[in-house]
Image (cartoon, rainbow, N blue to C red; front, side, top):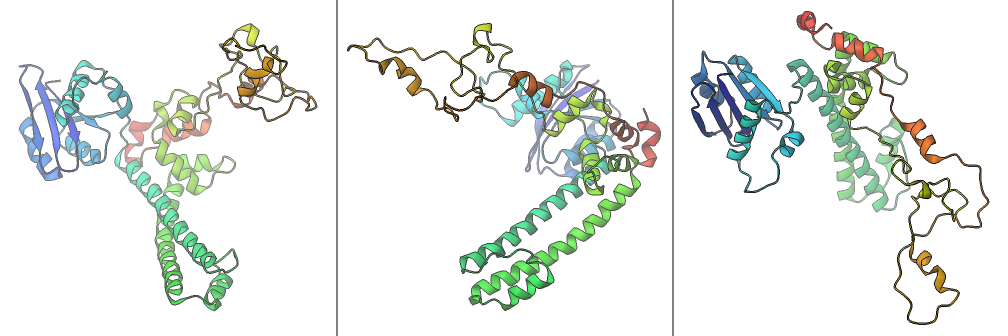
Length: 364
């Protein structure tokens, strides 16, 4: 790599810091405004050279990566959390220059934690799926506003207000002029949102019919065409996942079961510890709180003083005992994720995530 640099992207400017690996020359500065034309003109100075730039995974990274690729350079998308962790303890004020230099130093040392950068067609599909989610949320908000107005004026609760019967009932009820204006406006906004949602659904359905990965996902029980498109767009190239556990963690749905008996000594095992609730409580047993030595003669009630300050259990001690299973082993057996290979559907997506023009490159 002849040129190694870091780009810290913001809405008003792009801070850069690059070094010539051959001569040791360094340069830093800012590009303002942060626009495609200015970035293209700045990259022209590196024409004919090999250059690699680390880009922060933030809003605006797409046009920066596109311009770097257009100029023949390579863009490295930095993973935000791991990149921040590699900075170490904070010793001085954090600035845009220090961020750009940090990206450049990590890239040059080969320790930059990188994120997968989706191609254009995957990024467009993600945008359409998330746009549809935003429109559905906005439509739900207007529908809830109608219910709130009706309840505010003492009208009975009624479902199906968007059906023909529901709209006829809304037209007949007596409302103050301002409330009537708000209800009519909400209905018009919902109708307009329905038109936009129909257009988006048509485009997403076309993607579901044309992508073999989406068709493979629809063969799973409960996965329709819309869910298949959302999974395909958000996962992208699944070849970067070694097993199903990594795929689940990528979605943010990782369920980790930590057994309380894994690190507890044998004396405090839940199976051997005395229980106050006939075996129903799942609270980890702990030693009683240390009390100060009494200054007055103790009574029969003072012996249970530590128990009175402990959290109260849901089931009293007089509850009838039930046959129970050791919750640690049953919870682990029920919820733990197998460290296995991805299902065949994910392998199909790995072979078909790319468009026809890229199928030769994307095959396993």
